[in-house]
Length: 218
Image 1: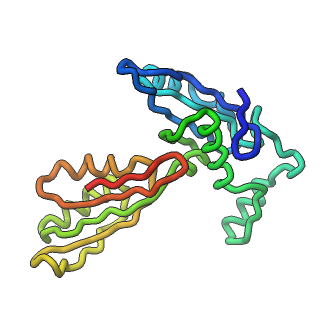
Image 2: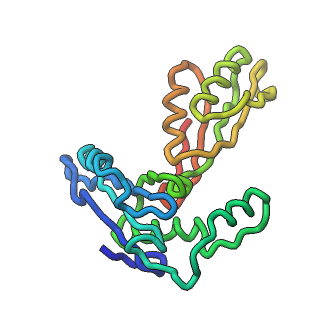
Image 3: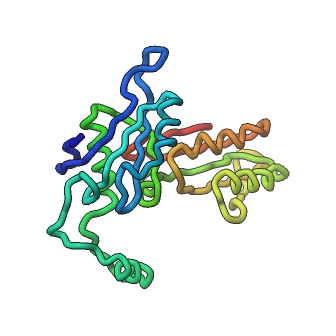
């Protein structure tokens, strides 16, 4: 079905609308397909698995793809030439931005009267479903620092070690911060890993995006 989103027509597929067993609206998963791909490229088995797990699944064709609004007047992109310019650090002038495409997705949700969703993306769609935040350890004994280096590296894909410095407010303690970038929902994953150790003080934040409200766990 067509929906007006961000000032253009977007083809949207909405599956699993309704209430769960407790009478609450089903949580929404927004599937964001990659560059040049239609919503039908999502594996049916994956969609059915999400529906069976109790989710409402929303898919859509990106602008200029499939049944969504076409921009023929902008011409066909020269992907190899554009990729080469990007690698050389030359300026690129795309016909529309990734931010505009993210607003298309948000507009589609608004057209369906949804105020939030969990975004899952592939390729370019995955980039639209990413965010960033900060992991902080305010006061840690030096003996624990190598363990937290290992835990943070595994949970965040962090290269190397954290940059530990003395904590003036607590004698014999050290503090560290790490700015991360990754998928929406990363704080929950990190908190699950760090909760395996007792008496670990930490805080991890996630910035809000078009698809999520952000979070803070400590």
